[in-house]
Image 1 (cartoon, rainbow, N blue to C red):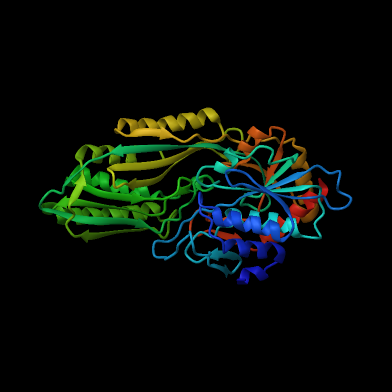
Image 2: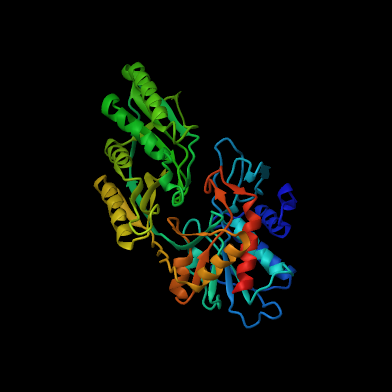
Amino acid sequence: MSAIASLEPRIVWEQFDAITRVPRPSKKEGKIIDFLVGFAEKHGIEYRKDAIGNVVMRKPATPGFEERPAVVLQSHMDMVCEKNSDVEFDFEHDPIRTRIDGQWVRAEGTTLGADCGIGMAAALAVMIDPEAQHGPIEALFTVDEETGLTGAFELGEDMLHGKYLLNLDSEDEGELFIGCAGGIDTIATFHSTMEAAPKNYVFYRVDVSDLMGGHSGDDIDKGRVNSNKTVARLLWDGMQSFELRLSYFSGGNLRNAIPREAYAIFGIPARYAEEFRQRYELFAADLKAEFRLREPNFRITLNEMPQVDEVLDAKTQFGLIYSLVGVPNGVIAMSAAVPGLVETSTNLASVKFGNDGRIVVTSSQRSSVESAKTYVMQMVESVFTLAGADVAHSDGYPGWTPDPKSRLLEITANAYRRLFATEPKVRAIHAGLECGLFLEKYPDLEMVSFGPTLRGVHSPDERLEIATVPKFWALLLETLKSL
């Protein structure tokens, strides 16, 4: 066990430590499914696995609580797999390297996986804690929350019997979430041809790196810079003034992460090389000044490359670069119903060149208002369609409409007040949770989401605040006892 296993409450941290040792990328959850099944068998816990890979464990009520309603503890198995470019790490085989950094637990150069590993750990701890008092418990662990909500979409029949559901996938201690945004992905595909690189060109590689990134729901209102948009700005300027020809572009990885890094390889006529260098230095200085308060570690570098063989055809280059500059990105609207809540947003998540001439641009749109979600999707589709791309959309997922009169909310809030003598914040969240999909299958469920404090999720800066885990655990136990 690592040093984090000795933190308190040990029963939770020991489970989290064990979870960090099991690779669990989205859509490749086989090892964590085996871990959960093994855990259930080791401890004599009843379990069931559905066709998609979701696992539910069942624990009977403690003596005297048999007549209480059943409660579902829900978390997702998969984790976002992001690392710094200078870190050697294989998310399909390597255990996460955790460390204690002052008041936080972090990973060494990668995402930590506390989203939602700490929620899983708490649920497993309840299943084996002999001191916990509760009615019947169902612990549901879903697959592929991060890249498609597949587990929630395809949840097997008769997997749940609970009246109440506690979602353990929130990231702010002291806050109880009772609603979330719905979302949809927009995928634009450009069909390009490569042609011979022009003669008498000098080729360069521009890199944007060391941005903060983060969750495209939770962090979209923080002014985080998008690496794809930033590289596209330089390319756009080069097209206007220097006959720039693009050879390659790569940026971002995940639909639900603000991209932190991107690079492009391009050429400039040799006769413009010196003038372009001077323009680049001014451009870089302008960006550093523009981003200095939002992105203090922002880096942009330009390096000369050997002659490349091929460049993108001029028509596709025009459509790609102009659409990357022109497509909306960030907050589109704030909520008129909930002060301070982002209502609608869009994130230009990734740009990938394929070997078959396809260039795939992935973006994600979110909104707590279904019609607004549709409209921002139409904005993004319109830009890419005008640029000559084929546009498709994911199935999307529904939002979770808040119910401020929920009995579960009342009980959870009262438990918080008793424990900590302070008022919890009741909020909706702009990020997507699986709760809306559970309601489609089980419309009578009452749900509340809470968790310890995490920061930097979906990025290698992900960290878990140690002092909030005991409070999270205490609230979970008190709520279960009180229902």
